[in-house]
Length: 268
Image (cartoon, rainbow, N blue to C red):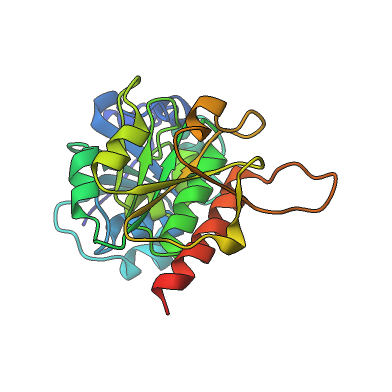
């Protein structure tokens, strides 16, 4: 690593870190922002699907952190006093660690699904725009061995800074593909040989009675509105029974419950 101290918030070498909240609009300059030590280690680790471009580390974090990181020759590491780092980023960086990653060429849905095994479990999202929920879904998908995540064109990009952080870096290691707006996720999944299970409080089959058969996709919709009736009419529908008076669960929580249940069969 090439370690450089910067004392100027206007230093052009750290321009990609300026106002990183704005930089969360991923895709600009082909870059995304990673924040915190756990996420940084995921980005630099052997399972990462993305290449780091540079690091920005607070001076009080650098002595303990940098010697523990993989040696990546030529990777620029900028070290700044915490106050300078906050001015660069545009808000207080309490974790004292940022990185810029390169998005590279996106994985297509056909590539991701073709690489999945004969008994693969994948997650598909329709219109999930909340960063926390997308991050939580990725974390659960990684925890229960999903082969990938398929997002429709209206779902939040998983490489937003907050989505990556909530995923504890799983968004950097889990294969994912995003469909263009208007592309039908169910058609894509069925043509790839997946049985689609749509989660809804109105689902016909209780989760406890649901068994995966071959390639299985778990389809999740937005909170509140849920999956449209037209979508539910096309696939097998599953519900998680709940106490009287409770009509739904957080979608990320739902993904964890369902993935745990389905993954338990492949583990037997």
